[in-house]
Image 1: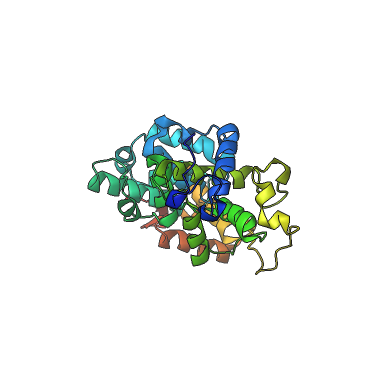
Image 2: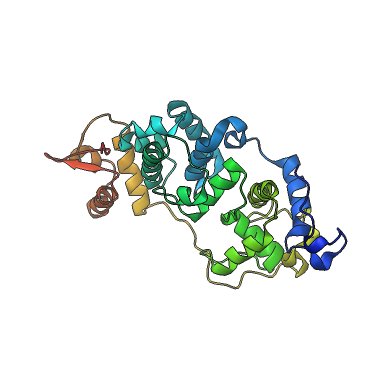
Length: 311
Protein backbone atom coordinates (compact mmCIF):
# COMPACT_ATOMS: atom_id res chain seq x y z
CA UNK A 1 0.00 0.00 0.00
CA UNK A 2 1.18 3.50 -0.80
CA UNK A 3 2.01 5.61 2.25
CA UNK A 4 -0.66 8.17 3.19
CA UNK A 5 -0.17 11.67 1.89
CA UNK A 6 1.74 13.96 4.22
CA UNK A 7 -0.18 16.89 5.67
CA UNK A 8 0.29 20.12 3.66
CA UNK A 9 2.24 23.17 4.76
CA UNK A 10 4.78 21.16 6.71
CA UNK A 11 2.29 20.01 9.34
CA UNK A 12 2.66 16.87 11.41
CA UNK A 13 0.46 13.80 11.46
CA UNK A 14 -1.25 15.20 14.57
CA UNK A 15 -2.04 18.63 13.20
CA UNK A 16 -5.60 17.76 12.19
CA UNK A 17 -6.49 21.37 11.49
CA UNK A 18 -4.12 21.30 8.52
CA UNK A 19 -5.21 17.97 7.11
CA UNK A 20 -6.79 17.67 3.71
CA UNK A 21 -10.54 17.03 4.07
CA UNK A 22 -10.34 13.39 3.06
CA UNK A 23 -7.15 12.44 4.83
CA UNK A 24 -8.77 10.79 7.88
CA UNK A 25 -10.73 8.57 5.47
CA UNK A 26 -7.92 7.51 3.13
CA UNK A 27 -5.91 5.07 5.22
CA UNK A 28 -8.80 3.09 6.76
CA UNK A 29 -10.61 2.73 3.43
CA UNK A 30 -7.48 1.76 1.50
CA UNK A 31 -6.40 -0.65 4.24
CA UNK A 32 -9.85 -2.25 4.12
CA UNK A 33 -9.58 -2.52 0.32
CA UNK A 34 -6.17 -4.17 0.55
CA UNK A 35 -7.75 -6.91 2.66
CA UNK A 36 -11.22 -7.27 1.14
CA UNK A 37 -11.01 -6.30 -2.55
CA UNK A 38 -12.53 -8.83 -4.92
CA UNK A 39 -10.16 -10.57 -7.33
CA UNK A 40 -11.68 -9.31 -10.57
CA UNK A 41 -10.00 -9.90 -13.94
CA UNK A 42 -9.91 -6.23 -14.91
CA UNK A 43 -7.94 -5.47 -11.72
CA UNK A 44 -5.13 -7.82 -12.65
CA UNK A 45 -2.00 -6.36 -14.29
CA UNK A 46 -2.47 -8.47 -17.42
CA UNK A 47 -5.82 -6.80 -18.13
CA UNK A 48 -4.07 -3.66 -19.32
CA UNK A 49 -5.82 -0.44 -20.24
CA UNK A 50 -8.02 -2.12 -22.84
CA UNK A 51 -9.29 -4.64 -20.30
CA UNK A 52 -10.06 -1.80 -17.89
CA UNK A 53 -11.90 0.13 -20.61
CA UNK A 54 -13.98 -2.89 -21.64
CA UNK A 55 -14.94 -3.53 -18.02
CA UNK A 56 -15.99 0.07 -17.48
CA UNK A 57 -18.30 0.00 -20.50
CA UNK A 58 -19.83 -3.31 -19.40
CA UNK A 59 -20.24 -2.43 -15.73
CA UNK A 60 -22.36 0.64 -16.36
CA UNK A 61 -25.78 -0.26 -14.90
CA UNK A 62 -24.89 -3.98 -14.95
CA UNK A 63 -23.80 -6.08 -11.94
CA UNK A 64 -20.42 -7.79 -11.79
CA UNK A 65 -21.78 -11.35 -11.87
CA UNK A 66 -23.46 -10.73 -15.22
CA UNK A 67 -20.44 -8.97 -16.68
CA UNK A 68 -17.79 -11.57 -15.80
CA UNK A 69 -18.58 -14.28 -18.41
CA UNK A 70 -19.16 -11.77 -21.22
CA UNK A 71 -15.98 -9.89 -20.32
CA UNK A 72 -13.88 -13.06 -20.47
CA UNK A 73 -15.34 -14.03 -23.85
CA UNK A 74 -14.89 -10.50 -25.20
CA UNK A 75 -11.21 -10.27 -24.26
CA UNK A 76 -10.53 -13.76 -25.59
CA UNK A 77 -11.99 -12.76 -28.94
CA UNK A 78 -10.76 -9.16 -29.07
CA UNK A 79 -7.64 -8.86 -26.89
CA UNK A 80 -6.73 -5.48 -28.42
CA UNK A 81 -8.78 -2.54 -29.71
CA UNK A 82 -7.64 -3.21 -33.28
CA UNK A 83 -9.12 -6.71 -33.13
CA UNK A 84 -12.55 -5.30 -32.34
CA UNK A 85 -12.18 -2.42 -34.80
CA UNK A 86 -11.61 -4.92 -37.64
CA UNK A 87 -15.05 -6.47 -37.05
CA UNK A 88 -18.46 -5.12 -38.06
CA UNK A 89 -20.18 -3.19 -35.27
CA UNK A 90 -22.99 -5.74 -35.36
CA UNK A 91 -20.57 -8.36 -34.06
CA UNK A 92 -20.02 -6.22 -30.96
CA UNK A 93 -23.79 -6.07 -30.47
CA UNK A 94 -24.00 -9.86 -30.92
CA UNK A 95 -21.21 -10.53 -28.40
CA UNK A 96 -22.79 -8.11 -25.93
CA UNK A 97 -25.44 -10.74 -25.33
CA UNK A 98 -27.91 -9.92 -22.57
CA UNK A 99 -25.87 -7.32 -20.70
CA UNK A 100 -28.51 -4.72 -21.53
CA UNK A 101 -28.20 -1.17 -22.88
CA UNK A 102 -26.62 -2.51 -26.11
CA UNK A 103 -25.75 0.95 -27.40
CA UNK A 104 -22.75 0.56 -25.10
CA UNK A 105 -21.49 -2.15 -27.48
CA UNK A 106 -21.66 0.24 -30.43
CA UNK A 107 -19.90 2.93 -28.43
CA UNK A 108 -17.15 0.56 -27.37
CA UNK A 109 -16.71 -0.50 -30.99
CA UNK A 110 -16.51 3.17 -32.02
CA UNK A 111 -13.91 3.81 -29.33
CA UNK A 112 -11.87 0.82 -30.55
CA UNK A 113 -11.92 2.20 -34.10
CA UNK A 114 -10.79 5.63 -32.90
CA UNK A 115 -8.03 4.13 -30.74
CA UNK A 116 -6.79 2.14 -33.71
CA UNK A 117 -6.88 5.11 -36.08
CA UNK A 118 -5.66 7.86 -33.75
CA UNK A 119 -3.41 6.12 -31.21
CA UNK A 120 -1.82 3.19 -33.01
CA UNK A 121 -4.07 0.68 -31.26
CA UNK A 122 -3.05 1.63 -27.70
CA UNK A 123 -5.56 3.06 -25.25
CA UNK A 124 -4.28 6.60 -24.57
CA UNK A 125 -3.17 7.51 -21.06
CA UNK A 126 -3.97 11.21 -21.41
CA UNK A 127 -7.31 12.11 -19.84
CA UNK A 128 -8.23 14.62 -22.55
CA UNK A 129 -7.47 12.09 -25.28
CA UNK A 130 -9.62 9.51 -23.52
CA UNK A 131 -12.42 12.04 -23.23
CA UNK A 132 -12.18 12.75 -26.96
CA UNK A 133 -12.91 9.12 -27.86
CA UNK A 134 -16.47 8.41 -29.03
CA UNK A 135 -18.75 7.02 -26.36
CA UNK A 136 -16.50 8.06 -23.46
CA UNK A 137 -17.70 10.57 -20.91
CA UNK A 138 -16.09 12.11 -17.85
CA UNK A 139 -16.62 9.09 -15.64
CA UNK A 140 -15.12 6.52 -18.04
CA UNK A 141 -12.18 8.75 -18.95
CA UNK A 142 -11.37 9.29 -15.26
CA UNK A 143 -11.81 5.60 -14.45
CA UNK A 144 -9.49 4.39 -17.22
CA UNK A 145 -6.86 7.03 -16.42
CA UNK A 146 -7.03 6.14 -12.74
CA UNK A 147 -7.39 2.35 -12.77
CA UNK A 148 -5.23 1.60 -15.82
CA UNK A 149 -2.59 4.31 -15.51
CA UNK A 150 -2.57 5.20 -11.80
CA UNK A 151 -3.42 8.85 -12.34
CA UNK A 152 -5.10 11.28 -9.95
CA UNK A 153 -8.73 11.79 -10.95
CA UNK A 154 -12.06 11.94 -9.16
CA UNK A 155 -13.92 8.78 -10.21
CA UNK A 156 -17.58 9.23 -9.38
CA UNK A 157 -19.84 6.25 -9.95
CA UNK A 158 -23.05 5.48 -8.06
CA UNK A 159 -21.22 3.56 -5.34
CA UNK A 160 -18.67 6.31 -4.68
CA UNK A 161 -21.35 8.99 -4.67
CA UNK A 162 -23.32 7.03 -2.05
CA UNK A 163 -20.25 6.59 0.18
CA UNK A 164 -19.47 10.31 0.01
CA UNK A 165 -23.11 11.29 0.57
CA UNK A 166 -23.28 9.25 3.76
CA UNK A 167 -19.78 9.54 5.18
CA UNK A 168 -19.22 13.24 4.46
CA UNK A 169 -22.49 14.96 3.59
CA UNK A 170 -24.61 13.03 6.11
CA UNK A 171 -27.49 12.05 3.81
CA UNK A 172 -28.69 8.57 2.91
CA UNK A 173 -28.53 8.92 -0.87
CA UNK A 174 -26.87 11.25 -3.36
CA UNK A 175 -28.97 13.27 -5.85
CA UNK A 176 -30.42 11.40 -8.81
CA UNK A 177 -27.90 13.05 -11.15
CA UNK A 178 -24.32 13.98 -10.34
CA UNK A 179 -24.06 17.62 -9.25
CA UNK A 180 -21.29 20.19 -9.37
CA UNK A 181 -21.17 20.09 -5.56
CA UNK A 182 -20.48 16.35 -5.65
CA UNK A 183 -17.66 16.86 -8.13
CA UNK A 184 -16.12 19.56 -5.93
CA UNK A 185 -16.34 17.28 -2.90
CA UNK A 186 -14.77 14.37 -4.78
CA UNK A 187 -11.86 16.57 -5.87
CA UNK A 188 -11.42 17.88 -2.32
CA UNK A 189 -11.27 14.33 -0.97
CA UNK A 190 -8.60 13.16 -3.44
CA UNK A 191 -5.20 12.28 -1.96
CA UNK A 192 -2.43 14.45 -3.35
CA UNK A 193 -0.23 11.53 -4.35
CA UNK A 194 -1.35 10.07 -7.70
CA UNK A 195 -0.90 6.40 -6.86
CA UNK A 196 -2.68 6.83 -3.53
CA UNK A 197 -5.48 8.72 -5.30
CA UNK A 198 -5.91 5.85 -7.77
CA UNK A 199 -6.04 3.37 -4.91
CA UNK A 200 -8.54 5.57 -3.06
CA UNK A 201 -10.76 5.69 -6.16
CA UNK A 202 -10.88 1.90 -6.39
CA UNK A 203 -11.24 1.45 -2.63
CA UNK A 204 -14.11 3.89 -2.16
CA UNK A 205 -15.92 2.30 -5.11
CA UNK A 206 -15.51 -1.19 -3.63
CA UNK A 207 -16.69 0.04 -0.24
CA UNK A 208 -19.92 1.24 -1.82
CA UNK A 209 -20.37 -1.98 -3.75
CA UNK A 210 -19.81 -4.37 -0.83
CA UNK A 211 -20.52 -2.52 2.44
CA UNK A 212 -22.17 0.87 2.00
CA UNK A 213 -24.83 -0.57 -0.28
CA UNK A 214 -28.06 1.10 -1.37
CA UNK A 215 -30.09 -1.21 0.88
CA UNK A 216 -29.14 -3.13 4.01
CA UNK A 217 -25.81 -1.36 4.48
CA UNK A 218 -23.32 -3.20 6.70
CA UNK A 219 -22.11 -0.44 9.00
CA UNK A 220 -20.61 -2.99 11.39
CA UNK A 221 -18.12 -3.92 8.63
CA UNK A 222 -17.36 -0.38 7.53
CA UNK A 223 -13.83 0.91 8.22
CA UNK A 224 -15.07 4.50 8.57
CA UNK A 225 -18.30 3.90 10.48
CA UNK A 226 -16.98 5.88 13.45
CA UNK A 227 -16.54 8.92 11.18
CA UNK A 228 -19.68 8.54 9.05
CA UNK A 229 -21.77 11.70 9.25
CA UNK A 230 -24.98 9.89 8.29
CA UNK A 231 -24.55 7.17 10.94
CA UNK A 232 -23.57 9.69 13.61
CA UNK A 233 -26.73 11.68 12.81
CA UNK A 234 -28.86 8.60 13.45
CA UNK A 235 -29.26 7.60 9.83
CA UNK A 236 -31.97 10.12 8.87
CA UNK A 237 -34.25 8.85 6.11
CA UNK A 238 -33.93 10.19 2.59
CA UNK A 239 -36.02 13.35 2.17
CA UNK A 240 -34.98 14.40 -1.33
CA UNK A 241 -36.68 13.72 -4.67
CA UNK A 242 -37.95 10.16 -5.12
CA UNK A 243 -35.22 7.78 -6.18
CA UNK A 244 -35.59 6.42 -9.69
CA UNK A 245 -36.57 2.78 -9.74
CA UNK A 246 -35.57 0.55 -12.64
CA UNK A 247 -38.44 -1.36 -14.19
CA UNK A 248 -38.05 -3.79 -17.05
CA UNK A 249 -41.00 -6.16 -17.52
CA UNK A 250 -43.33 -4.94 -20.23
CA UNK A 251 -41.22 -1.90 -21.12
CA UNK A 252 -39.84 -0.93 -24.51
CA UNK A 253 -36.44 -1.99 -23.15
CA UNK A 254 -37.70 -5.54 -22.78
CA UNK A 255 -39.16 -5.51 -26.30
CA UNK A 256 -35.91 -4.19 -27.74
CA UNK A 257 -34.06 -6.96 -25.94
CA UNK A 258 -36.38 -9.59 -27.39
CA UNK A 259 -35.93 -8.26 -30.92
CA UNK A 260 -32.16 -8.05 -30.59
CA UNK A 261 -32.06 -11.60 -29.25
CA UNK A 262 -33.63 -12.85 -32.48
CA UNK A 263 -31.06 -10.94 -34.55
CA UNK A 264 -28.11 -12.05 -32.40
CA UNK A 265 -29.04 -15.70 -32.74
CA UNK A 266 -29.24 -15.55 -36.56
CA UNK A 267 -26.20 -14.95 -38.74
CA UNK A 268 -27.75 -13.16 -41.67
CA UNK A 269 -30.86 -11.10 -42.43
CA UNK A 270 -34.01 -11.83 -40.45
CA UNK A 271 -37.52 -11.49 -41.92
CA UNK A 272 -40.10 -9.25 -40.31
CA UNK A 273 -42.21 -12.30 -39.45
CA UNK A 274 -39.48 -13.66 -37.16
CA UNK A 275 -39.37 -10.36 -35.28
CA UNK A 276 -43.16 -10.27 -35.06
CA UNK A 277 -43.08 -13.55 -33.15
CA UNK A 278 -40.76 -12.04 -30.54
CA UNK A 279 -43.44 -9.76 -29.03
CA UNK A 280 -47.20 -9.96 -29.16
CA UNK A 281 -48.20 -6.27 -29.13
CA UNK A 282 -47.72 -4.77 -32.62
CA UNK A 283 -47.65 -1.05 -31.74
CA UNK A 284 -45.06 -1.44 -29.01
CA UNK A 285 -43.06 -3.87 -31.14
CA UNK A 286 -42.98 -1.43 -34.07
CA UNK A 287 -41.95 1.42 -31.76
CA UNK A 288 -39.14 -0.67 -30.28
CA UNK A 289 -37.91 -1.74 -33.71
CA UNK A 290 -37.96 1.86 -34.96
CA UNK A 291 -35.91 2.84 -31.93
CA UNK A 292 -33.33 0.13 -32.61
CA UNK A 293 -33.00 1.32 -36.20
CA UNK A 294 -32.68 4.95 -35.10
CA UNK A 295 -29.98 3.99 -32.58
CA UNK A 296 -27.95 2.18 -35.25
CA UNK A 297 -28.39 -1.20 -33.57
CA UNK A 298 -30.41 -2.68 -36.44
CA UNK A 299 -30.16 -2.15 -40.20
CA UNK A 300 -33.33 -2.43 -42.30
CA UNK A 301 -32.92 -4.09 -45.71
CA UNK A 302 -35.17 -4.28 -48.78
CA UNK A 303 -37.89 -6.89 -48.69
CA UNK A 304 -38.76 -6.48 -45.01
CA UNK A 305 -35.47 -7.93 -43.76
CA UNK A 306 -33.36 -6.76 -40.82
CA UNK A 307 -29.82 -7.46 -39.59
CA UNK A 308 -27.27 -6.30 -37.06
CA UNK A 309 -25.22 -3.35 -38.39
CA UNK A 310 -22.33 -3.98 -40.75
CA UNK A 311 -21.12 -0.40 -41.12
